[in-house]
Amino acid sequence: MTNSTKNLTNKPGLKIKLEEEMKKAISLSIYFGIWFCAITFMAATALEERPIPLALFGFALIKAGLSAKFMLIAQAAYPIKVDKKNGIVGSLLIESIVYIIVVIALNYLEAGVDGLIHGKEFITSMTAFGGGDPLRVLAMSIVYWLIVWPYLIFVGFNKVVGNTETLAVLFGSKK
Image 1 (cartoon, rainbow, N blue to C red):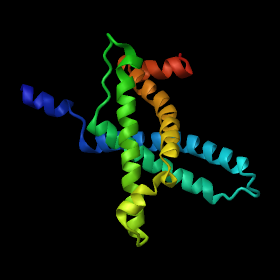
Image 2: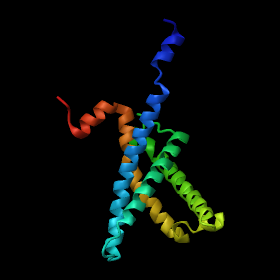
Image 3: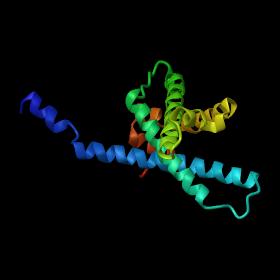
């Protein structure tokens, strides 16, 4: 067998890559969904909304799916790299901030497109993101970062020690 033949047989097929990306998208959507539903529940109870409309949770899950997609786009554009010399935290701190900037920027674009769909001006709709309040956008950015940070630590740990070891550390050995 030649080297080029070995390389072709060792490369995962398109179907496997699509399955892996789909698993990442679904698991990240579930992760974000849990966070966004918890935040939604807290906001609804803080506003003393009774009964709590279930539609709010539907919107939270849609937002989770979009945020997961945005996060995966950010990871594709700026892949996670862990430098063992700097450790996982040191390696991923700057990347986490870059990811949040990308996610927030894509949220602004999403608001603009949503405005266009509803017959509004693109720029006006973009500036209305976060209620048009920069302090609210900053607060959302901090919350997004606090949500994304554990995910990045998990992914970084997984890259360093491998999936089997990561699962064994988190959930115990299958022995």
